[in-house]
Length: 292
Image 1 (cartoon, rainbow, N blue to C red):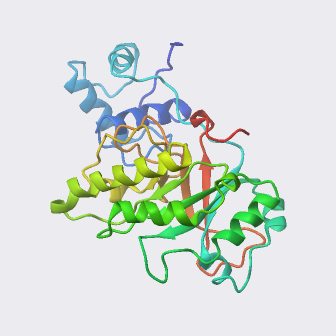
Image 2 (image 1 turned 90 degrees about the horizontal axis):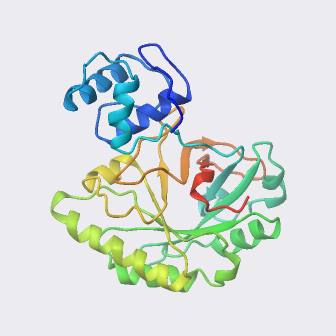
């Protein structure tokens, strides 16, 4: 590893982000990886130093780096691509009344390079298939955008039935060049945690077998914490929704990094008449999911 810079109170920059992400990953109280070494990061650093028998001076120097490297610290902050992507559902076109103009989306100055489209919700019922799915997939694909499909996971509905709903209604898999996505964002009661994790695994395994691609898990810190912040899902790339972080979101479970970061739900994109505002996402090139 290359020599690391000394960081301390009032330091800022990429090295601080990398250190904050490491502290978060290991359970120390850093509210957000914002690249600013303030009092909270200093306190978390001192807690790390104390736990590891180091002088608790709050300064990240050679001794602290040596111990941190033994625990997996690499000194690398998650990088973000110079483009973004969006995710859309029926409400982004007023239930199809105002179809998305994908030519205009492709020309948006935010440099949109990928899109995820809602396909299904739960297992059955009038809202279990997004009525604009096929139109959105065809439109995005026609302008050359990589497209993926996502399923909103409903609690209290059989995982096998939900997986079947998604697999059946995504139609022509050849149009979907990105991995399938499980959207998990509902809080779980403590008594249902183990069953819910088993069900999530069931859905992921069935969909991976059908698509021949490793699915992505979309979630947020609150929903994943409600599951006990489980660490057994790291083979599935993480798509995290977090609107409170200015530079990088928190690290969940045992994921070493995120692949996609939904950083806002109040964006605007040309070509989309969206009363609920738009979800916009960063991409981490280190994940290797997009061939761009």
